[in-house]
Amino acid sequence: MKRALVTGGNGQLGTELQRHRWPEGWAVTAVDIDELDLRDPAAIAAMVASQPWAAVIAAGAYTAVDKAENDSVTAWAVNAMAPAALAAACATAGIPIVQVSTDYVFDGARDGAWEVDDPVAPLGVYGASKLGGELAVRTSGARHAIVRTAWVVSAHGSNFVKTMLRVGATTSPLRVVDDQRGSPTSAADLAAALAMIAVRLAEDPAAPTGTYHFSNAGAVTWAGFAREIFAQSAARGGPSAEVIGITTRDYPTPATRPANSLLSHRAIIRDYGIHPAPWQAALAPILDELIGTPK
Image (cartoon, rainbow, N blue to C red; front, side, top):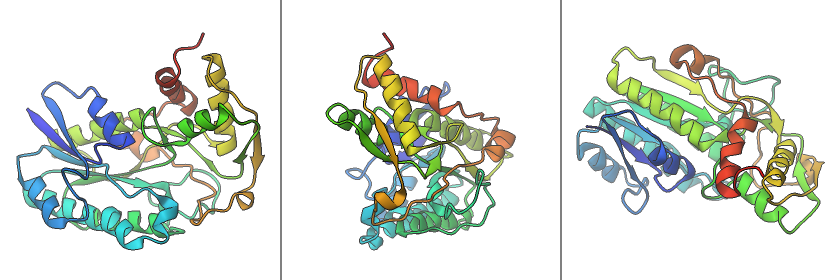
């Protein structure tokens, strides 16, 4: 039995990696802070050395983007130093690591989708700390894949879909930012992509390594995303609300968000044959789980 170690087991992605149907002969051990404190490099090294893992998927992260602006030490510890410790331990053990990163490594100041080799220029602590994690993994000597993603949603945890449904049940109209563009990402679809990459890295010494992007396909603003959530929700008998588009300036936050978070899928299609589904189609199973199937 080949076993993958997954950090961030209680998060959206960690939950979906555990729910994912892995190939025969594979299993997952998912840990969270109660079993592995990502601020403790010695504990990380001990965990990786504790058994012959086939691969590591580093899904755990400090994702409180606004809080990170005033909590940079913790953000850097979890998002940069933990991947450094994980990757170093993987290099020692001779096993691959799949590191999850973010669109926040880019400044958002261009048109079109970001390619994997475009210049990085994070706008805040969160993006900078995640970029630090990328650099640590790249220079560790471990065989690796770094997978950047954006706008992750699911039926679990806290995310934009669940927030819209909760707020939309009692409030209308809703004012939602309409000048930031990106591609929503189903945590389940992302988990499937990460699992495929991890398995191939573990089983094929010639498997491609490097940096990749995964999100669901298609572009939308947050306001457009909210409108589609409510349209699909209404078809299921769930909450619906009117959405009024506003500018980023009308909704100030401590951390600056990239105006353009679109991620190119060119590299992941070329190397792994992974073709992300449209974001509208990926939204449907999430709402099926939260509300029910369309009536």
